Figure (tube, rainbow, N blue to C red):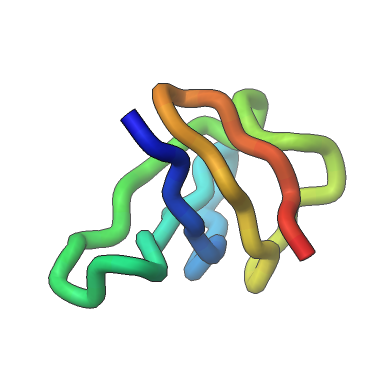
Length: 57
């Protein structure tokens, strides 16, 4: 598996919604904020795979 790039499109309560950037047809999916790096906010770009994410520039 290869890592993918995501952007946090929305935050609702304790959950963030991630949109995959390299697949425009992919639906946003929900991830608990507790599983994302500290400082994650709406508009944050992330790289990750298999539930492990890091903030990307």
